[in-house]
Amino acid sequence: MRNFGLIGRKLGHSFSAKFFTAKFTSEQIDANYQLYELTSIDLLPKLLADYHLEGFNVTIPYKESIIPYLDKLTSEAREVGAVNCVVMRDGRLVGHNTDIAGIEASLHWLDIDDQSKALVLGTGGASKAVQYVLRKYGIEYKVVSRDSSRGDLTYSELTRDIISSYRLIINTTPLGMYPDIESAPEIDYTAITTEHRIFDLVYNPANTEFLRRAKEQGAQTMGGIMMLQTQAIASWHFWNRVDG
Image 1 (spheres, rainbow, N blue to C red):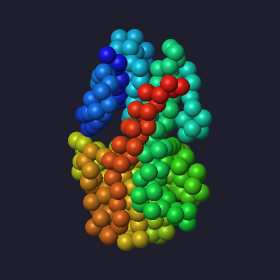
Image 2 (cartoon, rainbow, N blue to C red; image 1 turned 135 degrees about the vertical axis):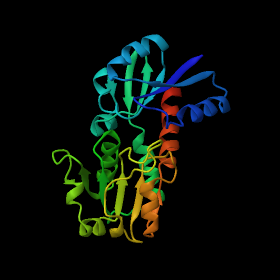
Image 3 (cartoon, rainbow, N blue to C red; image 1 turned 90 degrees about the vertical axis):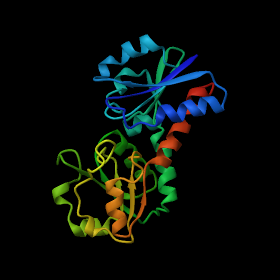
């Protein structure tokens, strides 16, 4: 049996095992997909030695810190600076970023044009993938962080005027993710209008507190389910194609 999985620090929110188990069954592939919670990325070599994974996904907080453990990165993963999918090929670990495909599909559904301006909430690996896609499509953006040294703006600097003029707002933080479902980014939601497009990368729950508050203002919203499914299918193709 072929072994695959997901690594992260806390994985109680994840749908990945259910998704990939169903996918492998439907494709009649004899494979196993498990969740592996690691308290430190330093435990990765032992995990690989113990379970002989052919491929695995990577989630919070290891999308960036996993890179030194890999033998090769695709050009996209290298430019983004984050990896969420790894393939074992000929004894070498190859890092991919399939978040890109999921983000592109989601923004297409939201009907984002190149005249939009975006606020990206958060600075982690998912944020880096979002920034890559926004640059690719020529969309101006600013990164919002709790730490002034990591973003363009802090949350305290996020005025009503800024929120009103940046009509695409993307949450890349884990705020609102199960089980902490009552949390949400600290922004002035009354500045959101019916012209706004709101995208939350969190997929569990499907309707986060961030999305709920934005919907109350009449904004068009999208959760992370489409991104989850799109990036998962992209991972599956990398694991099962001949050239890796």
